[in-house]
Length: 222
Image (cartoon, rainbow, N blue to C red; front, side, top):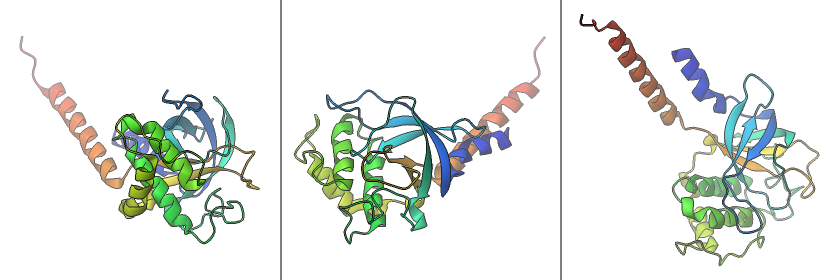
């Protein structure tokens, strides 16, 4: 049971840098009237015994993906320092990169991704911020969801707080090259579980296992 649990929680971490087969599965339903917005769901390692359901966060308004679409993608861990296989960290592909640091750019994106879980009413404004970060001017920065937080404020917070992000906990999923700015499959950011979360999960599974074992050993009254 412990071995199965360990394999279960480590599967999302098993793909650092390399290639994988991706499938786009579905959306959460939130939209701006034109586009569905993150988080989406997908399958990494599609068609293999290591297939894993993952949350997908789109940083790429310049391209498209379709329901059920399957494609081959490069997976780049943000801590790798090599962004040549990414759409927005590669200066020969991204006309907006200039002298900006690819790591800082993606760390700011990762910070925005980390906010989706605790701001479920801000999916559209967070998505706009993620798109605007990679493609400045893509969406109106004065847009705000029901709580009044504007896209510009999310971008400002991302620029100030990106240092809180552990880049090793995030991966960038980009279609295999040669890369183009437009006309390909969208790029996504995937958040992997932190080691502390894995440890807590394993402790919880172990506690449940011991409790079940204890119950099995209790005598049954006649």
